Length: 425
Image 1 (tube, helix red, strand yellow):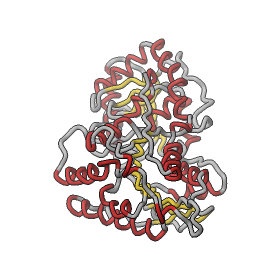
Image 2 (cartoon, one colour; image 1 turned 120 degrees about the vertical axis):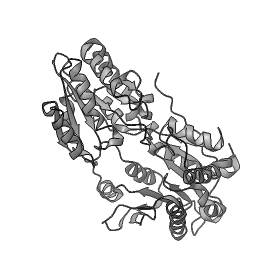
Image 3 (cartoon, helix red, strand yellow; image 1 turned 180 degrees about the vertical axis):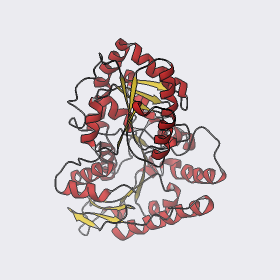
Image 4 (cartoon, rainbow, N blue to C red; image 1 turned 90 degrees about the vertical axis):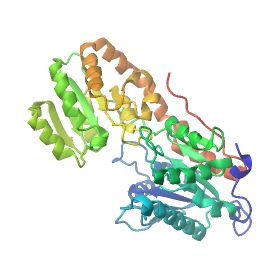
């Protein structure tokens, strides 16, 4: 797997003033609010807003375990630099924002140059970049002995249509960056891994897979769904957008009514299509079948979950999914999911999910109707949730443990080792 290029970070970049092994990390955290997560971590508090253990939180914890210094860059607006324990979080502009076509392609190079300036200014010997930048652009850092790793939380391209010219140009940069093990990858799913290997070839670069991580108190302790209830209660969690399948729920509801199913939809989220969806619900005379809860924090979400039997995750084929944590969160709450085939998460939860081909509105309605009529089958799906959810509470499968492998490999001057997480049976 190209062991030579993967053994990086040697020489001056590895040594402090007195020659000690000093791990210094630059991490590009992207658009999320890494500042708030950092403040809560520094105070020793759990983040009560996000539904899982955030990736930036896992980064801070891994850095502390390894005694590393770090600079974390974040494009989240309107916050000041934060510092604690040798770790700083700083805001940086996003050169890609609002760009398209050739301008967007050029902005990726500008972003890489900005990140490399940060790395050199900080004296980083390990740099972890996101999917929003092309790994081939970081060759100057690698030539200086810096380890460059890419964390991929989503697929690199849509599978349902040919790549455009600009996309092909970008993929050429990814392929070059992965060749001969130059840029090891932290991968959020087997679907992401498959695309990396299609670009670079199997075994061309080390790949460390990881799963989202949850604490046991995130969704545990909820009462079991009431199987004697006559109305099937269905929750939708996430952005109310066409690409997330939110508008398809109206047609699914119409089909369920036609099949004689007594049901209710609980919509937990906001988004650009919320007003349109509410108007469609009213036009179809379905207002008694939909409850719009708006954005829900974890406490509010737990309350809605107690009222529901199942979740629906109808992501459309035109959305590039890297995993889809809603599938997991539903399972952890003891509520099986009816989910789109484009969600890689469905491969990891076994019998706790009914998989429907993307964009198949009739298929979603049929799956929900079957669960309503076969309550024994629904009970079996519910029983499968506990075993299926256990792997997502195991830190050994987490992003943090993937970071441990990167940092251990740097200290031990060895290649980063592959790690694949098997799909559920």
